[in-house]
Length: 239
Image (cartoon, rainbow, N blue to C red):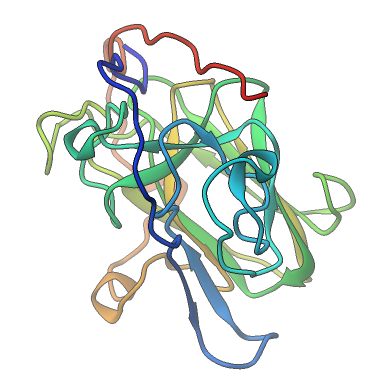
């Protein structure tokens, strides 16, 4: 199985402004959470969180301007329960998450930088993933932190209709100023949500923040069958 389910209808209509939350006023200490809400299904995120339209200026938005951009292969996908093609469930902020369909990793660039920590939720029921935090743009410079992301449970909880469920929280603290992050793994086999810059614990509210974020080795390792859904016709290229 893959992350995607078969698309049975076109996805259209108006899209709300993408949600991202900043907690605290000081830029140096700000905690920013990216939820990917407001993006369309199978849309290249691009500069959506840089105050631009997604998909190279042709898609949703403009989104909020947090000075954050993503590589072209970083895509949004919506839970099939919400009308998308995502074989996902139990997203911490329903119903849109980040994944990728090409390359070894999707990259997030933050030219202004962030410090203290980095965290997120993820689901990877077949193969593990990898996160690298760098002090240079485009995955260059010194490696500030690295996380191996173990395979997550294939339990279907809390959403039995999505194979990639649940999403598991994880985070890391580091010294220095980070300017880019690689979200690595196998294409169409790992999804990320509530990406949190400036904190080692992910999430939007106190209830989430108070949950214990496990160290990488403490996550449950389960062997899983095919991961996600039936084959999906590939996303058409926009002109």
